[in-house]
Length: 394
Image (cartoon, rainbow, N blue to C red; front, side, top):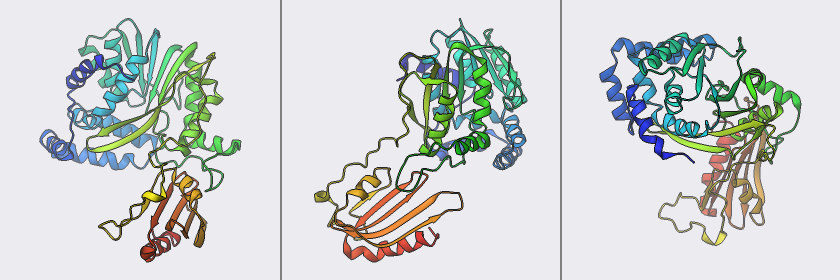
């Protein structure tokens, strides 16, 4: 839950930074073309391509370039709704903390908002982009803020000796967004094993382990941490939670999955965690798939007689597809394939018939499930689909 009373202040703050809220890509890119020169756009596109290479130097160069006064408002306007979603939630959870560390603060858009909302508290923002930190300092001075400091610091190489009551880490600790995480034991389950080497590999290649160790040393005895990373997929969420729990952090409140817009694109992200150490009644760490809307399955209400002859009787792309697949009556497998994919996941695809119709079921060890059920007359369509997936063409 968020405190909507802060919303007008946050809108005003984002406008002061020059950010605009857009709901259509067309309007956003029109403003981008009107605002940025061709040279600015060329620089921006080049930096985006270099950032995709994934090196730390390329990432720092990207954020250095985007902190330029001309580029900053245009680029960061894409994240306007992200700032609304995270800014309000974090501001409401700062509570009794006297000192707050904002990790990966960037140009300081939200850090300065928190400092304005809580003038009685001290804020420190750190980031490894020197130009971003320079811009943050300039903007904090322009706002007349005396309770916020910014420092160019890379957690991967340097640790601060200070101690903080609250640490904020939002989109800052897990930089490898394409990392698949840890696979489940097999395609039939969502459970992960407890093998330490898999967890250690995840923490090492994503950098989350070393960064959490560094932050743990900077948190006061009764301090708290707010954590929000791009780890919604269960294969990434579970090892993140295990990394946090292994360092003595407990859940203070139920984690919250957050949806926001990047102009027209919808981002389902999180969860957002409020963590502490030595909590008397911590909440349970949940390693099960998130609830979805596809659980209900009534064979008597299948979509037969549709105006579209190719429309399936039933289709489910959620984790609950496994439950429905297990409940199909009088199943007979016609074809099935199980193989190892190049990215390490185990894939199973199965074509069969049941009392409810002809079905195609796909499952893999990175928690993806799909079940399609059609009438017998549409069997050829599913057979073609099965062959595409089984051959690796789909």
